[in-house]
View 1 (cartoon, rainbow, N blue to C red):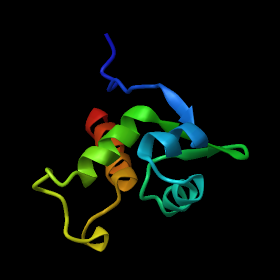
View 2: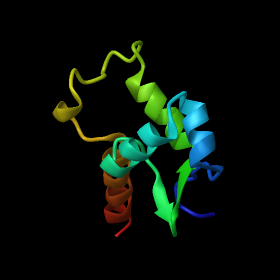
View 3: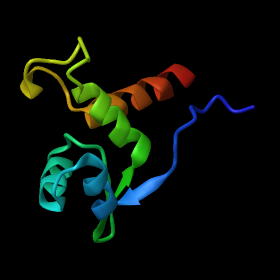
Length: 93
């Protein structure tokens, strides 16, 4: 049995991600480039994991009591996920 964390692997393209988030593709690209929305560029196309977009929405929810008052007060979701992955790798050593 592997100790690797399990990740949802369903990926969607930019058009579907924008539709899922109810924003324009241009806004999606801007947010992805800035690192606020988790995504990666594969060749000339952006690819998004639906589970990470759902987590992004949860983190921005008005019901989320731990939501920072300003985006400048905390790291983006993508940065937090990268930090969690790096910590997991360090813990395995």
